[in-house]
Amino acid sequence: MFIRCTGHKNKPILDNLKYIASCGKSIEIRIPYVPLFNDNQIEKIVAFLSKIKTITKIRLLPYHNYARSKYNSLDMVNTLPQDLPNKDALQKAEDLLKNIKVLHEGI
Image 1 (cartoon, rainbow, N blue to C red):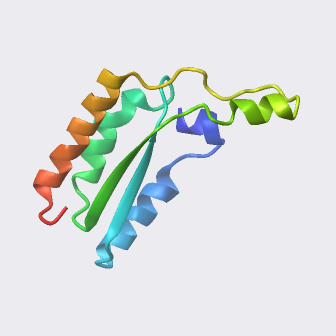
Image 2: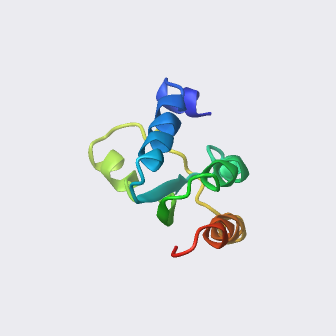
């Protein structure tokens, strides 16, 4: 899905994250949560992040459709996702991400 949305692989991002962690730098992770795009990837994200020991904070950023009015006012076609995260799915993702906090003291 990442390639379809961005045109690129996420390997450089993941490699950079590992490199920054290997330098002992504190890392804050921000994860956009977009239904039908990455909502089915949370377990993989958690598995990857649980290996990063210098994470100090993780923020889950639920997708919103606030830009809809901008598209309308500019008379542009809105190509953004229309589905908003449902509360249960969002809570499940947050619960999975909280498991990483157990693995890293101080988060």
